[in-house]
Amino acid sequence: MSTGTGAAMPQALFYLFGCFLLTIPAFLGLALIARIGRSTRVRRAGELVLVTGIAALVPVVAYRALEVPALWLVVALLVVVLVVSVAMHVRSYS
Image (cartoon, rainbow, N blue to C red; front, side):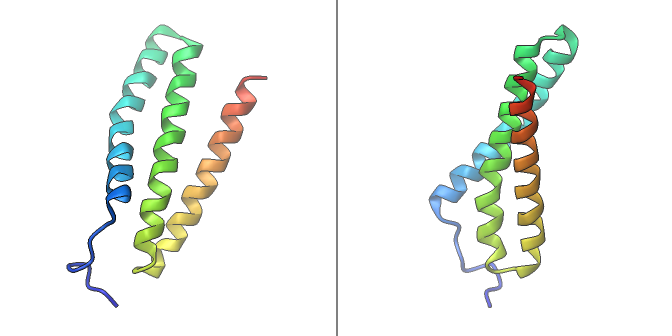
C-alpha cells in the first residue's frame, strides 16, 4: 500500500484534472450568462461544459481509487451523475 508520496499521477490524468478545473469557472460563467440573458443556447453550452468536466474527473478519481478503495463509491456516484446529465441534456433537445 502506498502512502501517496512516492506515486506520481500519469501525465494524461494530470491534464484531465486540469481540464476539470478549467470547466468549473467556464460552467459558472455560462450559467450566469444563461440566467441573465435567458439564452437556451448558452444554457446548453453550459450543460456540455458540465458533462465534459464530470467526464474528465471520472478517470482521475478511478486512478486514485486503486490506492484508496473507499473512493470507488465516489467513482460510482460520478458515473451516475454523468449518465443522468447526458440523458437530461439529450432529452432537452426533443
